Length: 79
Image (cartoon, rainbow, N blue to C red; front, side):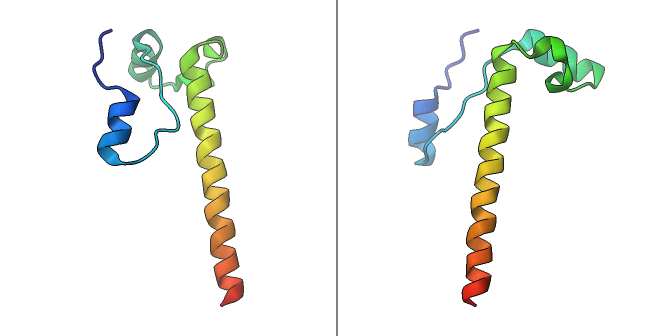
């Protein structure tokens, strides 16, 4: 599809780096939503680019949460 929202434009608008993008994959997402079953749990979808992008995003979120928890713990220890 022709989507006119580009990561660079979003990054500029929010003055924040875009670290990940999720590919447009209507053939995977719509049936998943209609069935109420997350495509990320469907083993047949693991080769799809959207699966890889969502997995990367989840890992980035986990890493960021870990960093924030470490900063919080340091602040508590420093008191």
